[in-house]
Structure formats: C-alpha cells, structure tokens
Amino acid sequence: MRVSSGRKFTKILGAELDKLVTLPLIGFILIGSFLLNLVLAAAFTSAGQQDSAGTQSMLELGLASLRYTQAGYIILGILAACSEYSGGQIRTTLTVIPWRGLQLSAKHLALAIITVPAAFMIAASGVLYSLFRMSNTAAGIDIGTMIKTLAGAAGYLTLTALLSAAIGSLLGRTTPAVVLLLGYYFVVSPLAGELLPGYLPDTAGYSMYMHPSAGEINARTPIEGTGILMLWTLLFITAALVLYRKRDA
Image 1 (cartoon, rainbow, N blue to C red):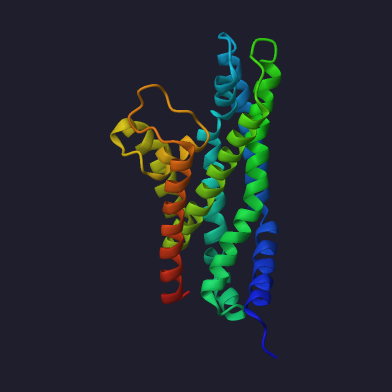
Image 2: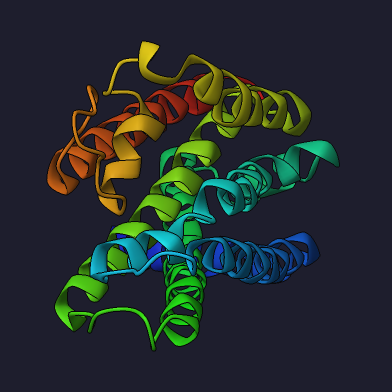
C-alpha cells in the first residue's frame, strides 16, 4: 500500500522530533542558555540602572545578552545536524528513511519547532527581568512594541540555529562547524565591526530586535534584517540538501 507524501513527511518529522527530544545535550544546552541569559540580563540591567530608561533602551538592555547566549543556539543547530555522524547512526537513519530530501527538511523543521518556543522564553526572560528591575525609573512600556521585539529576537535565534544546522550538515562534523561559526560570530564579526557589510547574517539579523544607533552605516530595518537572514538560511539549507542527496553517508 502506498503512503501519501504528506503522511510520509509527518512520520519522518515525528521521528526527527523524537531524536532531538531524546538527545540529552539538547535539553542541557537550552537550560544552560536560559540560565546564562538571566545572569547576563541581570548584569546589563544593573549597568543600565544608572540612567533613566525608556521603552527602547529597556528592551535593548533585556535583549543585549542574546549576542552572547546565541552561542547556545549555534551549538544547538550544529548538534542537531551532526550528532548522528559521530557514531555512524546516520547510516541507520538513511536505511530506514531513504528519502534524503524529506529527512533533512524534516530535521530542520523539527529543530524550528523546538527552537521557537524556547527562544521566545529566553528572550522574554531577559526583557521581563529588565522591566521588573527598572519599573520605578522606566517609562511605561508599550505591549505591542515589546511583543514585536520579542518575536524578532525569537526569530533571530531560530534562524541562527537553522543556519548553523545547515552549515553543520554541509561539513558533517561537529568540531569544525563549531569552530567556524563561533569564530565568525564572536571573533571575526566583533573585531571587523563596521568593516563587514550589513548584509551578512549576524549584522543584518541583529536589526530584527535591536534598534540601530544614530548614524550607523550598516543599519537595517527589522523587515530588511529578517529578509536577509532568511535568504542566508534558505541558501545554506538548499546547499545542504543538494550535497546531502549526492554524497555517501
């Protein structure tokens, strides 16, 4: 009996979700990222309490920690893509699920399903902490603005995880992917600063939730930043799909 493509994809998606949920390091990374984000948010908020904070600055203080806790989502995406290669489980996966395109697409979708709510909770925790600590000195915060900003932050973390997963799939090895991406995000990009063009994934993606400073050369609107980061993510996922279907496990 033939199984419809939709039902086939649903079963593959369920299998990929089960693999991610039962991978111990996934939960450890998410919990660790949440706790680290709270610690950093507390530090940034304490540093900002010396000045009066309006809506924008309060949101930025609560989300400033994401530039560091995004490391957890980079590693999360890489592990989701590369964990099966280290022990050779990928051969079993491809034996059971020979449809490589569907399997890799389902893996990325499963990662997004896990990442979106976790990313929103992490972003919200920093903002709510900042709002609580600065409630006496800060102006009233607009709920609509806060929700849009949190959605942008969660979207940035999710797309960063998916981009990292795609690069992990391309390399097929955890360590080189981690070194490459962490090196870019935390060494090359900060040191290069404004020398880097504004259409790179991180420089464009930051505008999804951080307001640009006055006179900033590479400033992007949230919509522009979202579009650019989505294009980068789709480009690498497409490249990963093409290579994944052609190479041996």
